[in-house]
Image 1 (cartoon, rainbow, N blue to C red):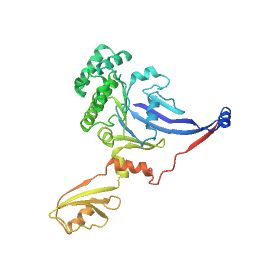
Image 2: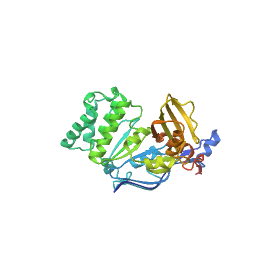
Image 3: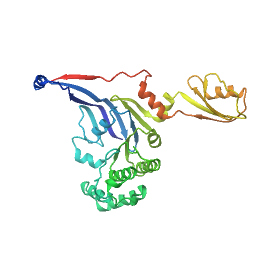
Amino acid sequence: MALIEVRNLRKEFNRLIPKTGFLSGVRNLWNTNYLTHTAVDDITFEVQEGEMLGYIGPNGAGKSTSIKMMTGILVPTAGELSIAGLVPWKQRREHAQNIGVVFGQKTQLWWDIPVIESFKVLKTIYKIPDSRYNKNLNIFRELLELHEFENTPVRQLSLGQRMRADLAAAMLHDPQILFLDEPTIGVDVLAKERLRTFIREINRDRGVTVLLTTHDMTDIEKLCKRMAIIDDGKILYDGSIDHLKSQFGSERTLIVELDDAPYSLDIPGTRVLREEGARVWLSYNRDRLNASDVMMNIAKTHTIRDLTVEEPEIESIVREIYETGMNGRKKEEPHVAVLDV
């Protein structure tokens, strides 16, 4: 069952083109020009119940605009959107009960009061029964170690502590869907792993559907099996991470350990990335060669003690898609229309 259904969703913003001078300002009263920018351009996708979708793209790609429409903050220019059977901007109150939202650069907590007092305010807003509130709070205390700082005012928290508190706040009312926008931005390695563990556990134990946007590809690889890439307001890719690697990651690295340090290792179709004693890192294109061909060529002149084939990093594949698009050609500039009113 699809909990998130997006059909031909579009969002345009109009920006006034200012004119200089007094007379031009007067003319603006009757003849106004706007620049129309398409932030989200007819996107379509679904997210199934219990799924975790990585939703990524460069800055200005349309990610945050998409999430703001899905959470009911923005009204789309065109298209259809259903979240758990509700239209976000038409059924805001019911929709708010179904979703939890965490924005990495903002907080839903109150700066000047302790974390636990913010939780109590949210309990009142969402009308959470005492039994459910206490049960969830105790679970989150353990999973996120909230007891370390729950009596501390929010403004005194570290970024990692605030993100843990925000995640707990977003889940207090048992939402079906969790929207995460850069939840680990600026957070240290240990705090990131704690946040990822919490997200995995609520997805596994509670069946929470998660839509995650982030620039940290490690978040995506550790949490999601499926990924959608958006750029210039359009969906460039929607599918499994494994398929993306196999389809677009043609470069492979072969790490080979020999009996002794080679004087030189010149294998046709490969290039040496680095050498450390008897260990050599070779790069090859899997569309032109396979690992067994490279191994046989090495074995003609050297004794192989050990070898490993490394898959390409997802970050390098995604970066290439950002730069060249899915067809490998340099991307064109997005279209901006001038609107006369």
